[in-house]
Length: 316
Image (tube, rainbow, N blue to C red; front, side, top):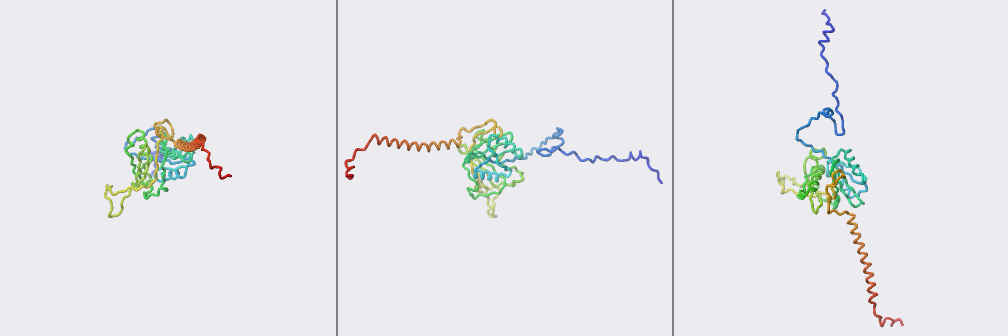
């Protein structure tokens, strides 16, 4: 029978065990998981030129909005798969802080706010949150999809092609508006709700210092005999889908829903002034009638009729 080894010899031969503890869990933030290197300050910067568009747009409206304007907002929501719709916001002086807080809670980077005043006038606030800039538009010539009943029809969620007229390159404020419209209405490439192809066009054109919006479907024949070769644009047609609206820029602000005024439209006339002028014209018509009556009375008094010889002949 062999001899037993001493305890000291077995301790030398024993292999040390590895540390089987789980790796330390990274810290969690509102924007996702935070690496341990970022917590310690050792941030590794990636030099790859790949840019991923994570644009998200919050679309909301004010209380007591008209039904036509609400339908226009819903049409815009259906055209933008990367937007998030929220409850109505009270149209007060503090609406800027409320909207900025909502945008942060919804994890968005832009905001479209439809503000209705007096049940008649529609204003569109378009802003980049939280640092700006932001623009205030007066919306006119509104025609929704339900109203127009056009024959165009494109797939919901497909990515649009954005086209701008050459007038956007003239002045600096038009260039700024073009960049904002590009960032808000352009659908990100790899968005989960977007379809990976283009079948409609958003057209932004400047006429009389107003931005006119149109939405067209790209109609391509799909028969085997009429199938188009690559680049055959002559046989493609544009069929309007809707909606239609016109944007009149009022002011451009440096901040989000406020701040320093970067541009103010000198040709803007508010709807209240237009209605006041119409009332003055109507009141002018009544004043003309009263003046004509007084003139007629003065004329009759200054030129009395001669007495008639036969006026009292039949009374006897």
